[in-house]
Image (tube, rainbow, N blue to C red; front, side, top):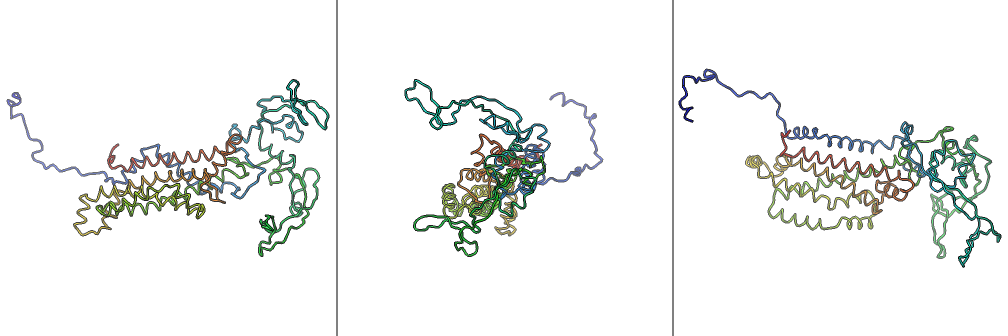
Length: 488
C-alpha cells in the first residue's frame, strides 16, 4: 500500500472529462414471460419430439379411420386374427402377413388346391401314434393299450405333425374356399348376384326357416322360446320358409378382389374379423374425448374454487379445504362402480365419475399459486387504485399462475387416459357398441399366444401416448418455471 501512496500524481489524467457519458440504448427487444418459456421449451429436444408424436396421435385419431374402407361394423369371423401386412415393408420380410400354425397335420398341406407359396417354411415336425377308433386300456398294465373300431382291433396310425410358417392371407383364402363346412348360405337374390366365375363346385339348393322380422325371447307357459316378431307392429309373425343355396366360392374374389389379390390389413384383424388399424384410432378418439372433457371440466371447477380459497383465505379457505378433504376421501372406484351400476357406462357417466373428485388436485395447485401472488406489490398497487377482487384475481394473479396450471393439466390428461384404459381392460367400463383402447387390449390378451399382434399394436399406442404426454408435460414444467427465466 505504501508504494501506491508515493506514485507521481502528474502521471494520472482524467479520461473523457470534456464529454458526457450516456447509457447505451438497448437494441434487443424485451422478452416476455411466455416468449421466454417458448424459447426454453424449444431447446428441450425430447419434449419437442414428444409434442410432435402427441400431435400426430391426436390427428390420426381424427383422420386415421378414413385411411381405408373398413369401419367398426365391418365384422367377418372368417377373417379373424389375420396378421398385419403392409405394402413395401412386406418386401423386407416385415409385416408380410405370415403366421405360424402350430401342431398341424403335415398331410393337410399337401392338398392340390393349396395355393403355391402358402407354405413358407416347415419349422419343425414330429410323429405321433394316433388311434382312429377307440382306445381300450389294459387294466393290468402288463400289455399296451389297443385300438378298436366297430369291435375289431386296428393298428395305430402314425401321423406327422408340424409347426408351419404360412402366408396367412393365401391360407385364409384356401380354408374359406375348400375348408369343411365353409360354404356360404345365400338367399336366391344373393346367389343371383354372385359372379359364376368365383363359384367352386356345384351349388346345392335347400330351404330354411328364416325370420323376416326380429327374433325375441318370450316366456310361454314358464318356458323361454324364440319368436319372430314384426319390426313395426311387434306381432308374432312366425318363421318363413325361404329357398336358399349352399355355395363354395373363391373367397377373396367373392369379396371383390382380383384373382391373386387380397386386402391389406396394416395392423391385422381382431378376434371378430375387424380391422385393427381402424379400431385403434376409433378407440383413441374415445380416450382423447374423455381425457380432454375431464380436463376441461376439472379446470373450470378447480380454478374457480382454488382461486376463491387461495385469495380470500381465513375462514373461507378453512371451510373449503375441509370440504375438499371429505370429497377427496371418496374412493374413485366406488364412485365409478355405483354410477355404472345405476346409470350404465355411457360416455357422460364415465366423464362425471372422473370429475366428481378429479378437480381437487387442480384446485389445490391454484390455491397455492394465489397464496403466493396475492400479496405481491403490483397486486397491492392495483387494489389501492380501486381494483375489485374479481379483476385482481383474473388480471393480476391468474396470469402469473397459468404456467403451473397448464403444466398440471397436461400431466392430468395421461392419468385419465391410463385409468380409463385400465378400467375398460378390466370390463368395469364398457361403452357397448363403441370400442375403446382398454377393450382392444382385453381382447388381445385373450389371444396373445397365437395372435400377438392383436395385443401388440394397442399396447404400443398406449405406451407411446403415455410417454409422449409425460415428456411433453415435463418440458412445459421446466419452460414455465420462473426460476429458470433467462437461463441458457
